[in-house]
Length: 174
Image (cartoon, rainbow, N blue to C red):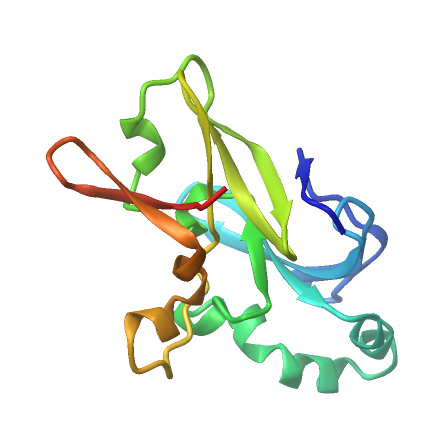
């Protein structure tokens, strides 16, 4: 699928888990099946999106326990939930930047304006006063020996810094 802008992630044929912590369905905007995990954080609730295949979508209906074993890290919401399946999130806190990075840019209005769907991932679309940048979701693979192995999406990104050299966020090289 070609790069495209996605305003929100909506699922078709959605199946909500009986405990209510996640749901699975097909996302027409991305052309893939998605596991959407509900996250309760401070006073906000938002969703994290993970790519699953059609077999797992159908398998959930047949054998919930097997599905839960396979996706335990993603549903568990610990630091290791940012697996290679992690596509993106409805909250900028799950994107590869310093806390509140979006507030350190000059902008005219809200800066988070949906996503750029690029190579199977939902990059946060940050619209600034003079340009737009696309920030990768955090994918953290703890078994990596180097930062490049632990944070694989940074390989296709530039580090954005303040004038003082303070790291703000990574942005897609496009």
